[in-house]
Length: 146
Length: 146
DNA sequence: CTTAATCTCTATTGATTTAATAGAGTTACA
DNA sequence: TGTAACTCTATTAAATCAATAGAGATTAAG
Image (tube, rainbow over all chains, first blue to last red; front, side, top):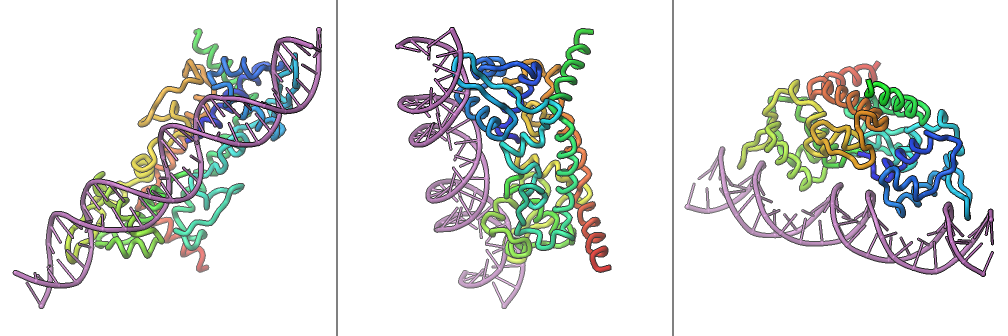
């Protein structure tokens, strides 16, 4: 399972991607997404440090998307907050660590199984950009009205 | 990521599935799979309680597979030890819990995205039975020799 | 009937991570 | 100069994880 921090980050980003030109106050995002304000502060700061968000201090300030919604995907967000996407560290790419159980990865069937799952998951997470998520949301809402 | 307990359980089960008729000592599995013996005791006991393993106490005793290798899949093992397979609780089936962030699941794009990932993951985990894993292992080992 | 082998059970511990909060600091506008 | 806003460091309480300790119960064999 994702950490709450990561889930909060995703919801905050999707919220901002609905109005990609806007500037947002921490307080407003916090209320709109039901995220504890103080916790959200740390999250937005992290996203700023990684270049996804920009900010302006002082009166009239706020956070805004620095990257284009089409260029931000969930794989990167998940990695930033929760590390490896794979279910076992020996099947991870960016956070790879060998494991003591399978002595030979090449012939370890457990390694092989989780590598396939990791690859499929990463592919799907990469396809989930902020842009595609917002578009999908529009479709889901339209479908419901009917 | 899976807990070590879960990962250990999977390795122990695959080990046993290589000789599905055999009886295994905790000590032997522990050494073969590099799993701390005391920790493994608890794991095997859990697997016995859930019906996957059987055991015989006393001298000449040990653990053995009660279910057929083809009938044990990784989705069930993961659920038993780590709970939900989904990355967010609102996308889980067996461990579903609503989340505060998306007020309306039907139109929540985050929910939708993680539901797709969950479904794909569960499908793959279900296809990974002890039988198929052992078969795959044989193939991997044969391929390596060449 | 005694011994050794083996699984069973309860409890505890230390380390780590998670989720959240507190409170002071900095910047910028009007 | 005051207020609105982001920034930073530190702390904490709770939960979870990984592992260990040690006593108990059962069975086979001699």
